[in-house]
Image (cartoon, rainbow, N blue to C red; front, top):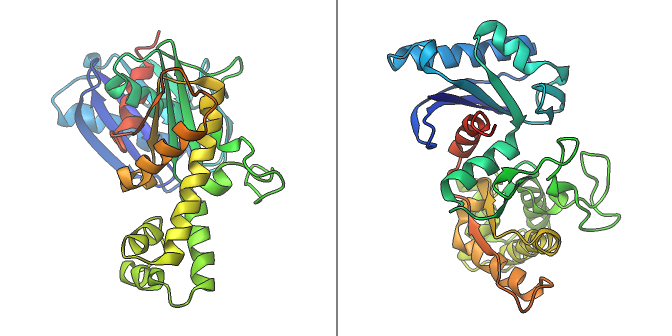
Length: 313
């Protein structure tokens, strides 16, 4: 049995995971990311202990703990080199965790963990697998020959920062025109608000009022109701996402590209037009096409993938 931990800016989620990737039990606590990092790590360990005791297990029943963490990770040492969402700079996450719970620990980027989880459960043994996550930013993880591809320095597969529009929107990374400036849920909300300002009669105002906020679903819901301004937002967003995937496909040609993150819950209303666009405009016109599909594990992907880290080597 393994413990997988998904450390997020809002919640710490953990699960007991079998060697086949089945979650036997889950628990979560708020991250409260503004507090000292040592307290966050203590809560991660306490959550792990809670799972062990509540499921009538002992520490000897746990092979190892895997942790998915946002930011730049030295997966060989378990050090968080840099994380913006949770203030960690050269923080020895693995070592600090083991002070609270003395078990072998593996740490990697959270998007890498999500990709590994989706691949192990839904990859069907594909030789290559790309996960794109559409959330606050655009994240990703790449599986080549059944293993995570991290690059020589551990920071490969950051598709959100390929350039989509030269000189475009300013990105949090400091560059302009990154893909995540156009394809993230954050960008979708921004563009929805801009469209609402230009179209005061749009149904997007009604949808947002009913929901209590402008969110990633606002434009999609209004577009389904026949609103033309909303449809333009959705069409633009789909093209932004698809253009980035075309670039990824042209370079990697993964057997499967899965789209995850909150926006992917739109299902085939999002995936189908992306798939059609990618198939039409990718360079490959004559060889077999990669599959473009929605990721299906949701928040469980990070937990499963983190546990799977422990089985990699």
